[in-house]
Length: 427
Image: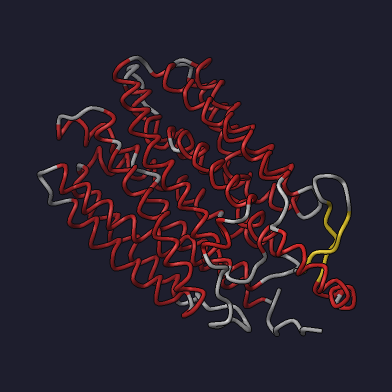
């Protein structure tokens, strides 16, 4: 029987959770506030919506793809040095972006600076939290990623106010200093999990690519991410195009309600069917966009959309790491998360520019309809992932270890397969 490392589910783990909240608050407070400067940047450089959205799209692609490497590095060396690199990149990138006069250079400085900053904070810290908990893993991860919603709640309205008062260039300097300082502060509480080390290597990529569950889940995330970031980029511009203000506040409301979704659904998942709850969040995300189409310029209805979208989005974010840990195990979680999250990078790179081109060529309603279609395809693919079986080699290994698993009841749990059969799975 393998003894559980000392410190698991302890108060020290919640310190790491607090550090993760701080780190994700800092980086996503910047990344998800881009919609508040979108119109100003588009007008300054004289480009279409699709071109302007490339600031956000390239950044999203970089930080999700970078997670493949930063997650594995954090698994091996711990999250603190990775987080400090992110702080330096975030501050430098935003400062350099404030100086550019060429939009292509801006893509590079903003994309690399903010992309590396988020990539060094998100996957490494969330994976670290997963290693600090067993009994309370789902709840801890739900709390940890609440920093994303809090950052959006504060960052978008604050950035809009700064842009109106000082312009976007000075705003980026202020955001760069603030986010770098918060990441440095978070690094003080970023500690590797008990009993972790070089042996906690994630499965090789070829093993993941041979797993049907991984492939279906990966493709599902690509499609969902194509439409997921549309409000973050376009909601403020959507209202301004109709002669109204308040779009940044709506983005903030999405952030606030996503915190509720993270905490509430993270807690519910400990007692409910995790995969079914995850599917419900994806379905609700797509359904919420219907409210956006119906709303038009009615601000009250748009607030309802923001609440529904934010709650579903928060639940999806909170449950994603728990679902991955459930399917593939907590060992080497940073590497598995990083590999899977490249799918969100691909969707984030494709979705916002395509939506921007559709808006310029047609209208917002057509573009939002396409985002709804993306979510629908994602749900179908996610259901396929839920029905898929583990690779034959893994099932044979489970059978060989069944006797020791039964004896090691402290490190096992009962789960229900999609077919309804109950079996034991190693924790």
